[in-house]
Length: 160
Image (tube, rainbow, N blue to C red; front, side):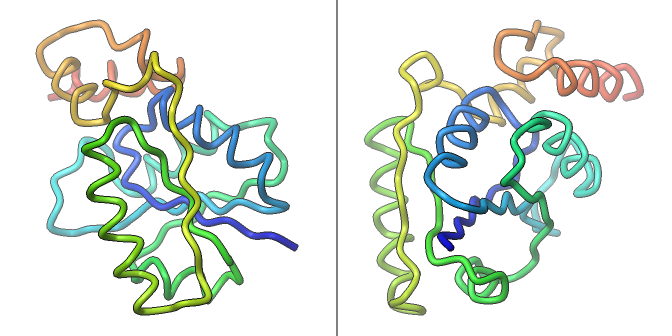
């Protein structure tokens, strides 16, 4: 059984993330989406909120499990039996960073490989941080996130 592991903060999950997830789910018998817990990172949504938003956004894709992780990625891969880390690439700048991380992870655990998927061109500029910034300034995030995420962002921004 081929098991993949797709880590990220997903704050919030974007249509670019969903592009990688839906395509990645076809590559693996099981795909874990790991919501990373980083107490040093200021997020718009709590870990549990992000987990629920991702679960709602991926409804209908049966071979995916959404989890949270405060472990080193390769260690969590070992824990769940994942043989591959899934990563999305938007541009050459992503590749440079991901290339370094892949080599670093391979030094820690040589039996876990990384699979890269290029996102569709229409998402090549898209990041969670740009969505958060757009929302903060009152912009419409509809073209960039699933509907459930747009509603959650609107509610969160109204509260603040």
